[in-house]
Length: 141
Image 1 (cartoon, rainbow, N blue to C red):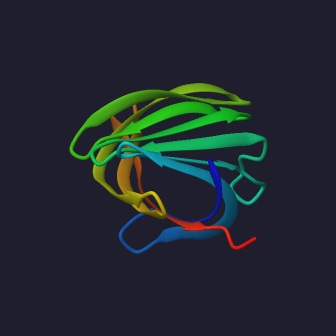
Image 2: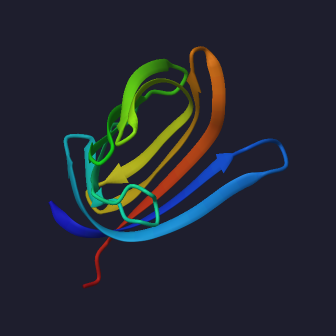
């Protein structure tokens, strides 16, 4: 894996008029082989998940986000599909439903980008809509 800079933009849509957005620029690791891009980074206090390592594996049709540490989960994203996963926090575990609206990857050996848009829910009820875009660029350090 090689050193990269990750620019992560995340938006949580609260309703039609309200949204929370943040941008995180962080160091990470990246590899690309046989159509699969893998990126890793450490979460921070800014994301509220300090002590968690995030790994994202992205192929042209599927993205899997795995978190290990203070938060533990494996979240699969495949456009047009619904998935169920377990999200473990220090307060306990919960089962969440994921409906992927968009999973677009443009990764190659020099980096690139990926975009996700999805809804989360519990017990059949939608809890919110989210979007994440990640840009992977070679580290200049």
